[in-house]
Length: 307
Image 1: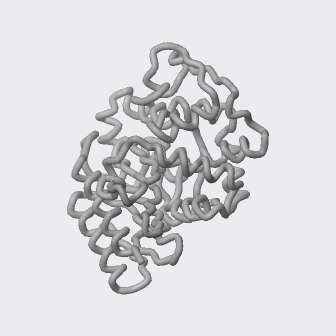
Image 2: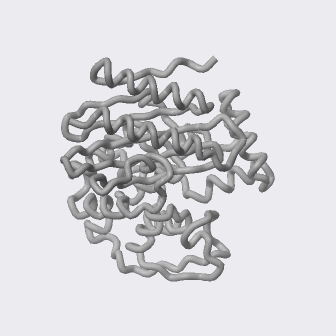
């Protein structure tokens, strides 16, 4: 039997919003964690915020910060060319991962591709320069030990293919079966082996990036700029699009995982960081109703936390 969510909120009204979001998700067969925090007042609301979950492409945000920190320190040149060959590249539908011919791209533009269109090949090319173990060590040195970087992006697909014989419909079925059974046939869905994080740790990372309390101002400013260029607006940003609002975020999707983290900034001065980490209990590659429920959570949380 699934345990009841553990809610957090600074008052009864905020707890009510958190409970309503969890109820909306549960009605769609969605489990997960959610946290929203006003970066200036500190008020927050959410549930199951300390649960560690596989991050899929959300992990590209802390990876980008580590790479940008290396650039700011003069240890990497953003103009350094990197050649990506599709014959030895990573799986993915966007960016260099979808290319059919070798391409040479500068480090700084690999960061753009990784964050704007979630390019797995760009991410793994960067991990060729800053290995996962080094990125993980830097995160721990920054006090971000609840965010773990353990493997390249393509390892997710290798593990799924290994478990399901290249049949990703079967891989999705295995992910759902294992979720119910509490086991993990696909290694990169196991929090003990995956790139993982908690909603609380991810929101704290965003707070430190937006308040310039981590790395260097040059690195955090560039990370904020690149996250503002994300082209995907179907989850948290879906109901936060207006001339008076700015959304900077990063989605993450793999099998039954549908995530997003980011910060919404209003002309009024309100700044709210959010993390939505979900697992859907259905065999569907596309679930627009789940995406819309994540968007509704973002809007409701933002409205509740505005000053």
